[in-house]
Image (tube, rainbow, N blue to C red):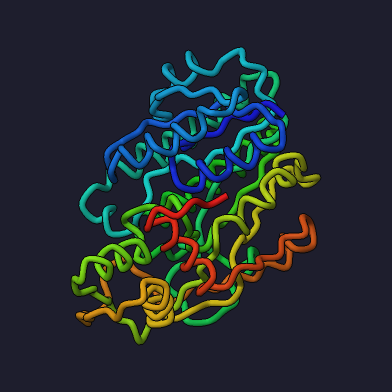
Length: 320
């Protein structure tokens, strides 16, 4: 496969690129390298990817359709793995335009590229568990209604799914949407809770917990996600457009996350307890039976093991 991978310098994008390259595929990566978090981490990921001869990189903002087309047009791309997005719920409260630009306009430009490429066989794109809204029940099933987003970020992800559905119906573009559930692991994003907790605990600083008695998350280790991506990319859905949950399907409380980080760091944390923040959801819980049925998706990494691997990477340990 010749794969266009957007968000190649991002957390999941980096891991996905390594997996696809290791299996012999050509990966054409694009990323804007914006400064939402430390660009040096993105550059470090790219340095790892550039050791593969079959990796090609272009610094491109996908919301600029002319720059995108100029970078990747005529490359014979057969699959697209669209992971680029403006992430983060709380950041969207202060920077709403960044989310519409990246997650709506950027998604539209990828769809337009696929439409006019003449070579793309399948477009796989990242959605999010946030589309399910603020719910206390579970597990969440792909057929559940998703009409009550708790944040602008969630609203843009629902919008991306709707854009995908319309383009499939209008132009026959085969597409698969992936609703990721709190993906974590080595090389992760510094704005994620597990990274923040690790950083502060290792420095002896207090950590802030927002409504820890309410919060549960379906934490999903990154390798469990990327293990299934090559099979998904190679399998255009017969229906034209399908959406799958990709989660661990075993939610943990926020306090269990803290305990896992404390155990891996070998230190206890001083805790500051505050109320629930605007835009946060209380619970995520994936039903993954569809992904298991169609792709053999079967997460194997529990939270304590995954966090230990992350902390090992954080402390400079070599990971395969």
